[in-house]
Length: 323
Image (cartoon, rainbow, N blue to C red; front, side, top):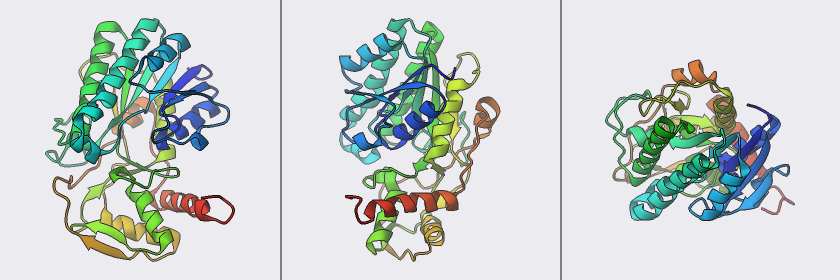
């Protein structure tokens, strides 16, 4: 499928811009669709065609219908779990209705388009299953964000079974790396890097033993390209075309701070704060299915990924960068 036409929604964002770059490198003609509410124009690869717009509007449907893309990597989303709690309607409007409008536009276009949906691993499975979690464990999300992503996956499954739309869901673990937004819950590595560069202690909530599965953004981009190329099983139940994208390794917040210090050679002092109510305690995912079906495994260890991420943030602080 390489060498065709690709659309990346949210392609000016943290993950989307890396996906757009790698699709370009794989020979695709890439269109980036983004409303720039959180993405940055500077992240858009120069070789990509940029269309400014919102996935919840008719503009997105028009781009999809007219573009007749071979691949759509759908990364435009509301990604803040805490915002989903305070405004679940806005979260569902973007993450459910925006996704459904996109897939309906694919169906209306009649094109043979593979839709790769950016879903979530940790927020989908919740705290009721002991990690690492396989794709088939019972889903019991504890936030509107997780509920919306699960709902969108159900719509993708429906569109695939009843209408033959070629859909696949990638369930990301905790993605980190260059260009990550240092604000909000999703950006703990970016937040820690910023604190270290400022000479301030990082904040650890509770005892710091909460775990996450940290996967490097360039490995996530590789997973999208692998999903674009792969021969997939026929549509079936919800999990038939869903793949965890992580490392299978749990890392506590305390261990993450220590690993960042080791990777950068700079001390990472920590200040403790009260535990946050409702915070997931443990999270990691199995990746055997992605390895066997997509031919994908992560290539970047945590130490290497943290060093590259920190170097990127440090470069933004360098004199003459304008940052």
